[in-house]
Length: 150
Image (cartoon, rainbow, N blue to C red; front, top):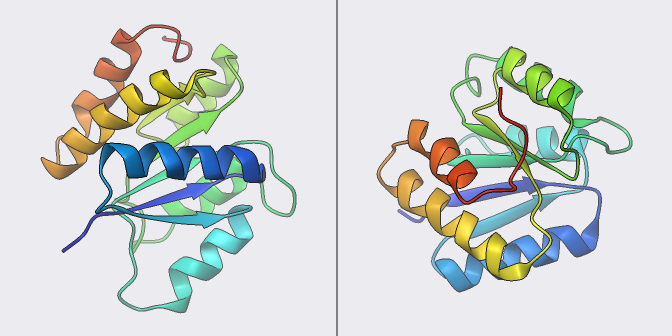
């Protein structure tokens, strides 16, 4: 069965860039998109058998922000084990701490260059296929400039 990624971001350019980079890394992966947390929750609950393999979550969005979405997701037994990467323009250590406290797998600052995005997604794809989620953050952060550590 094909892997499914869900990217939740109110910036359409960022969503499209993410989808394009993911398709160039692994064209078989389905990349679903949502513009905010409320839309993502509707997608998750609309289909009984729908569950992404991993979620990339922006923080600052209208309607339902990333923190609200993550709190709701992790409070529901059906969805609490879906790995979530907070994927944002923020590089604030405080945001990383909040992400950790709310149960995110890790915190990644959006790379500015398409090549760096592809490298990051290549790491994620390899480890999602192997179900080795713990190594994602270490290897992505080893690329450098991908967010705060702590």
